[in-house]
Image (cartoon, rainbow, N blue to C red; front, top):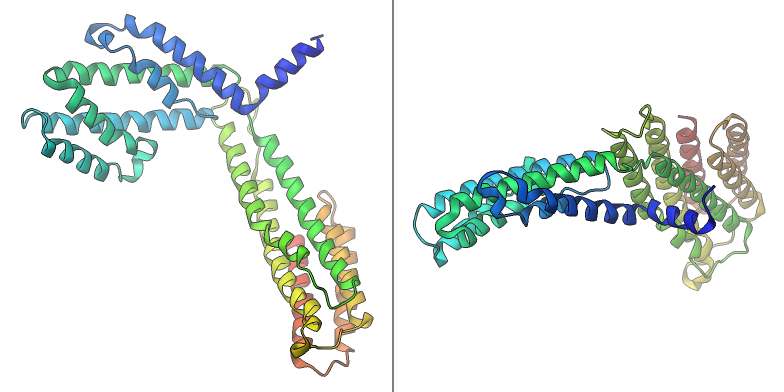
Length: 352
């Protein structure tokens, strides 16, 4: 059994950024060791091998291979561009501008991806550094970069290639917990004394799009990390996670809509020019119960049938309370109905 110190070291090495740094360092060192043994004139340019290893080192195997191929494509395109310009004569202000300008234009090709920046860079290097020996330089540059990229991809493939599917599911579960908390916030507003003089609950709900974007990126990342990864015994199907994410996005949208209307309702009484009577417990209590029931349904993952049934019953009670209401303000009635309608749409999303 590892000692406490060894366990701490293993946990430290398991951190994605530290693991990536260790693998990048290993790949660069190995590429530098191989570079002088490359046959031909390419051995005169060994310093490009570790560079190739570094540029191909990404957190996932798929990204390493894809970015490595795109880098090579941009490199070859830039070398080809420089070869045409070199034929015009020695480097001048005009030829430098030409290589950079055309290189940037070519870098806009959609398929180049990460290789877009290498088109003008490689062209400039060949033009200014290669000089009269541009053919040998171009060959050495391309070959050694290829050596480094191959080393980088191999190291990433063989040395603890990371899997992030578990992290994606953890983030998704935390997202649903946060959505449930925000529904509880709305329930709390309907239980509070009006008018409210703060907007903390709205601020928390308005931060949901940022959280959603992070979870969406984590799910995509988790899916990508499985591709061409030798550590996975079988590919984990993340389609269920994507469905849960789509449901979460719909819930967040309707929660934000409900929060905006509820905030307007709950604070309006604080403005003497716009004061409207509080709807009273006959309306607020059913709405509070409704959003508390929604929070319970959102928080559950495996078996939502019972909490959804309770939320549906609470929705019926809320509609009945609104139908029986005596508020003479059409605007107030429309706003209260809007909050209930948002809840019904959240229920539809949960049941989908």
